[in-house]
Image 1 (spheres, rainbow, N blue to C red):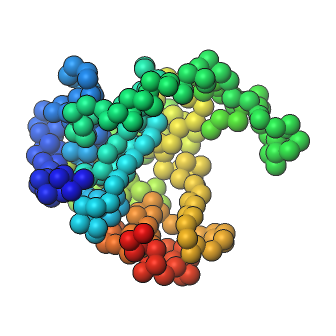
Image 2: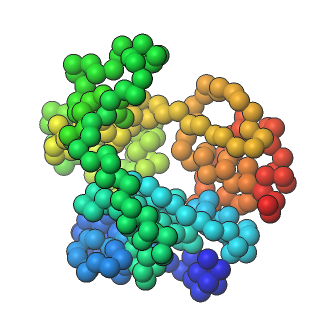
Length: 305
């Protein structure tokens, strides 16, 4: 980790250059796409390489490594590549699950070859025990608070797992069934939009160098996906049912409590940074949540073990 810290200046990652090229070529680029770094042991294919190259900010993990002079070890693991790569930041190591192989994989940004412990984990193939299984209740239905609300007729199955316990142009667009709003980048850059909770979320999501020319919002309960029957649920709208999500914090010094007030995803990183006694990520715009921190002494939480 210290080698990466010394050899790589995270502020020099060519994020802006990549974004400008995307605008010029009108090419579609995945959020963690990087053609320079392929999956370990795999041949390069179009749009298959991944890394944190497109990140425009440091992350909590980066700041933790920097605060400890490169001594902290940072690993991020997720089912999805973006779920590991983005939290892992520029200085961490990321692993994600491959649905095609049943193994956890990574890219050449992090390693030239998999460490021995990763090879050993994949060799055991622990995911195989869940192959072709369905999600069912592990306890009698009467033991669940919402047991009687499970497996309702209108629920959809997630792939083969079953449905039990899962988890000018703008003006024309809004004439199409399923669309409620379309905003052009020109209007956003000029500040010529009516301020509403929905348009505020569009403004926060808009990136002048990366976003498209028209940003659209679907009607409530519509999917912006070409196969609407493929997933039981989505998370791509600004409506309340997609954005009303509980946030949980747990750790030494954090007292049990339930707080009911609106916050945003941007408040999570500065809260964790304050809890650890380190600087927030370079692109952080949120505020620490005082309810989490009021009984925490940063000095005892962030000190060396």
